[in-house]
Length: 340
Length: 288
Image (cartoon, rainbow over all chains, first blue to last red; front, top):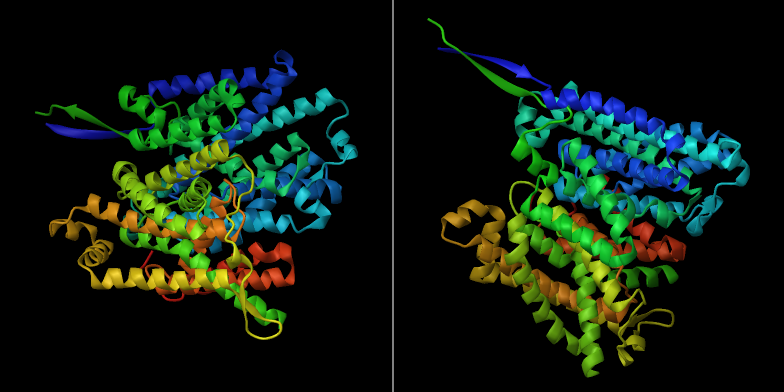
């Protein structure tokens, strides 16, 4: 009896889900023709939380980089958009793309400082860095100092002439960013970088001894996630049309809620953050009037999930049914052949 | 003269930061565990002192005798019931569970005590000062806090190096698994470590309440100050933590002297610069 092996990437479920994804995408692109204004606004919010959740999950779940300072990049993206559009005369959509790129550039020296700390200390270190950005922007009087600024009306009009046109454009940009964030995670995980990241997560010394460049891999993942987070930040404040240091660098809005989404959904998967985002918005529809009790409830659920089901709800589902919607893993199939 | 005064006040402020940091340093030393809700536990202690003072009308310092044992008990029970479950090879569970606690505590305090700023009145202590010369004088309260920090750190140091429980805690810090082989119960040891750390948090909370205004949202900033003091001083070294607290306090005082809006930022920047120059801290005793 001899055994032969094949490495399989996609499963029947993942092949079905890929075609389903295309259908859902077409329906979502057409949303401005079937959804009302309030729904579009809500969907923009869902998209940016989904993108933030994917980025945090990529960092913590694959890169082993647990950050509680992602609000640094949300705020930077937002402020760069406002600065470029209001003072540089750049078209807001162009400024949005540039904001993502510049945020990634700023993340490079930031990473050199943050990477001096390991593990849990890295987490708190990223928080200090985010506070440095918040306090620094509060000192810049051209950007409104501590009270912030609004995007001038002339610039808002330059996005699109009508209000509906603006809202539709922001919606499509948000959809594109959410898709781009998921695509980034998907293709990164399927690339050799993804394999290196998974190896680092499982054992840093072991992967290093096998020739994985751990520092460089982490650096690249950190900078890419920062750039995408900056892009999302630019989108958030393009929708809000107003920015202030406390709103832009809010640890509660841009990191705590995102962590809760990822923890509840499942860290280190593409499906987990999607599930987490859906649960988060359903809960919010029912409980947002409860004020701080809503946050207590959400935090409580996240703590309970972390204690009793550390792989999140998606982890529970895969443990039971073995479904994988996005083929990023590799599975070993053992073929038993009887040889004579 | 203004500058000398600022530096002197900064050194005294550093005593408070060392008290914030001692508990964090101790928990990391024994369990390799960073409590993200550390600052919020300090704020809980401050509200605990507020309740004691409101209920009995005693001077806030007397509240220490209720808050410190209360926090120690809370720390022991919390560690045994919840936090011990999260400890292991993976750093994510303790980090995320305590991060969740941080958000929960802030919002519960907000519901119970509202967002109003609070402060405990310490009577004559608040204004009394010892004049050094015409332009420099030392406040009695900052001096008391600084002296308390010295006593707490000296006490912890003596405990770690002179008692048998201290020896077990140090051994646990060096090698958890071997200590278990020697017959020690890690779950219990971790409970004791957190109880001691929480007692220090209790002292820090009472002083926080006496020295500055506080509200439910000020915890995270205290966590960051404590963290910075620990890293600047070097992991596992309590006297180093005191030095880290003083450096942070002086950096903030100098920043505030330049521009009041620059105080906190100056402290953070000093921390980041030291992190780049001396990543292991000034007086490291263990590796991160």
